[in-house]
Length: 175
Image 1: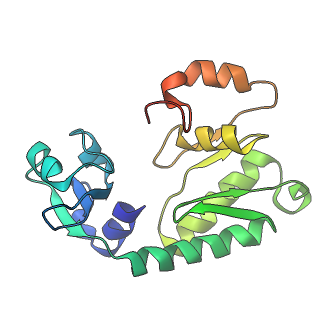
Image 2: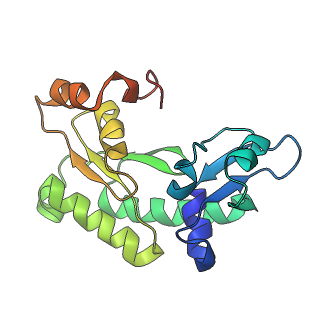
């Protein structure tokens, strides 16, 4: 999220390995672009190691006020789609869309509309996971990032987990 906001604000960063984090001697990577991830960079890697892995990357200090402002803007959009929004971090939230089908259509249509609205109003892309439980929805949202849309139909949860593998289990696996 931080890297996406930095690329939005600074178009010269787009398509380049971009690393956001602490710039001091003990700094860590807070976020990085997908181009930087290709070099093995991830959060919360020490910044000195990120510089070793990708010395030609663009390194920028984090701007929490800016990220917070963008987060609030996105959450305000989410709240137009559901009265129940549970924000779990600056860049992640769960929506309970129960009972909204007459307003927004079936789940895939509602999700596509939500993604489109966020893109139009913020110029940022979001990934959406649709499932009966927050746990599976969280895993589904990671599927196809950075601009994913994945629905796990009721009764297909085990097949989905088997397909993506145990290493992708949220809070349990490697990632």
